[in-house]
Length: 309
Length: 269
Image (cartoon, rainbow over all chains, first blue to last red):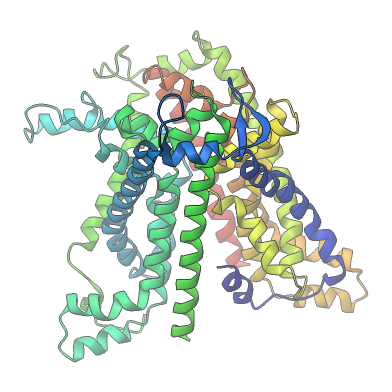
């Protein structure tokens, strides 16, 4: 992404070459102190000993990672067994994020395609319509979703009044509610990259396929999809990554049974568990997963760029 | 485009799904807006249009809490967005008009770092950082954290705009013996204004909206609007929350709309 954005601009010049260091210095300093240093500090904290009632003791320890993966009994001296509690929470997060991504793809792909095939004047209007909700406070959007889906909420009222159902659907506090919430949170991230890819797509290819008697769906699958694969891939990553670490959707829509990584981490710093090194370790594991996904996707992207010429 | 055979491009059902998509996106917001005008004490029954919950937000039992929270939110958003936009404008000039240099990719990575690190992880890291250097948590810690994560949101529209501006205007000024500083302040900055405004507005909304990071780095008793709303919602959704949500979502929508038209207007220049 970095290289693409940098080389894409034809107006990249060296007019202010001499001042470059001074121009970039405020950004370097601010982000090094307020983002890079904290992440490094978090890495260090994950290897420290926990202090009861929050905080840490400055003594090296692997206890946080050990607690994550192994169960050593109540007094910590049983032979280690694999600890499934936290792995399960991570697995559920991945699964929920995957389901939300799939849902976003199923709705987002046709939407992006439809928008990209509008007239040139109408496209920005459609994109604008799709992105507006994204800029509304995520908390408010999630609360609104919960209000709409409640057992006595407007959706159930509506469905019962038209006679589609007899008793309210229980949606809130299920996995599906969380998936809907995540889908609602990040849908524009799916639509925009796919839209950009379809907009660049040369429809003469589809015409050629049609001339050779390919059906429309075959054309979609065998000609269009391969050509816009990088956009689809980017969309999936952009929905999946923030979904995995999300806090509000599982917390407000999921209830206690649908615990995800975000809540697990939050609990270490806010709730009664109060184990900072463990929270730091869980955050590091989440961050590593995200970085691996991003690196993998950057490599895919580079490969696609090379293949596309 | 060039194709006259529209049927090749059209797939049955795609339009329907697009409309469904819009319904899903807007239904919760519309429903909350409508119910914020409900006269009823209960959430479920509709008893006619009224402004009582708006009055409740300003004069009700929780009004003092919401007023302080709103003041904190707006002060933080204004200072954070202004600082982040300034830093981002300078950085964009260095990146887009600074020629090739060794740390270019690293710099871009650093600027986009807040977008790549999951929000909850950034929240944990920032909390740990302030704790480890003994920085007392309060409004200032919220502000500093907001400045950092607002930078990429301001940077992206600004650098995109700058890449679209030919440097011939600045070159012309320089040929006419303007100093580099003059070329920057008198030529580049005015041309950049649409990008800068749209960057500022996006940073402002992102700061105003943030819940997770604020929730971690705020001190005890310090609230912004999202954390105050979250605290109330935890005890159940009440009608006054819907009134306050409607007001906040109107602010966001108005600002995004302004940002959209500002960034669009420069095409006609």
